[in-house]
Image (cartoon, rainbow, N blue to C red; front, side, top):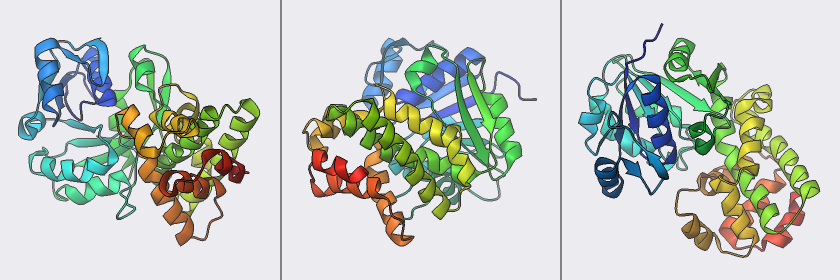
Length: 329
């Protein structure tokens, strides 16, 4: 049985990392937030607020914040990775010398490494010492941070190569409103969280073009089929994509007004360039890089994925979104 009062280090003080800090402090854990952003560090330290990523929410004095990796990880029993996927390897390389033996690394980042097509759990495993007994766990599913802050019932999936460590993460992180369901399909759990971001951009394009329910429902439904094909090609179980980390995450990311990927697509549909849309959002849009990987996987496995191909055209080849929408069907 995992006790409260454990030390949790959260790598990344963005929207999700700050939300996790508030949730876990309330549960009774000792929490330290690590960030590379001096502005964020300074604001939390002086004002107990993270106005860049989570304005309007005060962090209790008990939530520590640091820019020093060694300080963050000292005696940490659980390390939550709440980072953009493209910096996970770099950060874990820095963290590796300081990870305590038998600690648990819980990955919330949703992405594939573009150069290697490795999932985030695989990236993390490559960077940590194999002889220290460190467990790596992945969490994915429909979990908009603002809704967690308001204690709206939320359910996600947790997975690992070692399901005992996944169950340990469930005990550490679960709250009365944040439910973790174990799923042995680690590949599928991670890939659902990766590729739903691609298709949420397509859903957002529908919004930006002023399409109504018929069109968007069709696009999201057909997106689920393409998502499953991508996942199965990479070794996932098809049934996983009918669950929380597949269909569930696709729905919330395609429809939530807080979804960065959906908002990015909406701005494309309204005529902004990818660069302009990204600049207006001001935070990482994971679906941009994920679209690049999805198209490459489709080509490597000879998959017919018209939505992926069309989105690649809009993002990387400056194709017109209104014309591209016709290719979704």
